[in-house]
Amino acid sequence: MEITMRPIAYMRSDFPTKFGIPRQSGLVQELRSTIVFDEAFRNPDALRGIEGFDRLWLLWLFSEALGRPLTPTVRPPRLGGNARMGVFATRSPFRPNHIALSCVTLLGMEKTDSCGTVLHVGGADLMDGTPILDIKPYIPYADAFPDARGGFTDTAGEFLLSVDFPKPLLGALPADKRAAAVELLRHDPRPSYQRSPERIYGLRFAGFDLRFRVEGMHLTVVDVEAYSDSEESENRCKST
Image 1: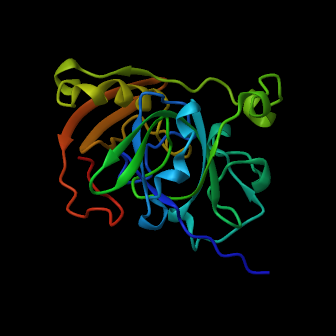
Image 2 (image 1 turned 45 degrees about the horizontal axis):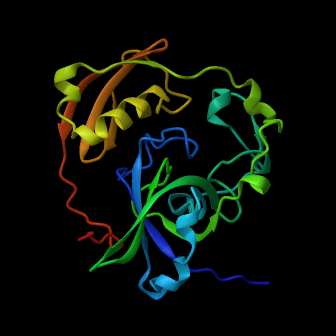
Image 3 (image 1 turned 90 degrees about the horizontal axis):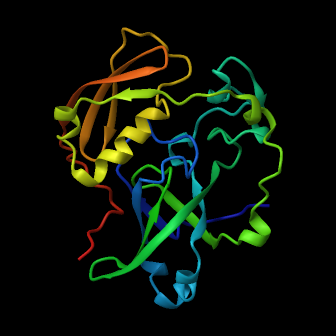
């Protein structure tokens, strides 16, 4: 049986590449993103009543993982990349159908001239231009199970870093992006297999390249530079 799906919307976010994106939604609530609907799905009636929900489930496509070879096991980063788990016991992007699930905070709706009605959300873990397959409301009485076991994630250990972001460098960022940038770095964006204290890493976020190094559990930002991305996402449009 063949199943065909098409994106209903695309994400506008501050991440032009996948490096540094939080490994789960909700970890960095300071992040701000916008959901822009495909022209075929811009009927405002499709959003009727959505403003009554605080959170939404997004079903989206790991578009950067398409075409990658599949294996029955993967190496979860929170286990240091040293242990293998079954793909269906993880949220790895390298899966048979490349479908992802994220829970985001609905911050508001905006009616625009160029994009129709868009949704502003917080805490999303999606790269700019990511195709969204469906949106469903988060329902607390059915979706929340705080006492449920978390499998191997319960024993993954503490991973948050202390961050030294010098004031002159932090001041180079727009004021509304600074808290999110610090929180992103606290969550250790490095690949699990890279732990050299001499290595300088680069994280592209909100039009800036954040350069940093990590020694032990301490991260130090060493440079911040603006960059110009000449390639506009074909699904990006501006709010008015």
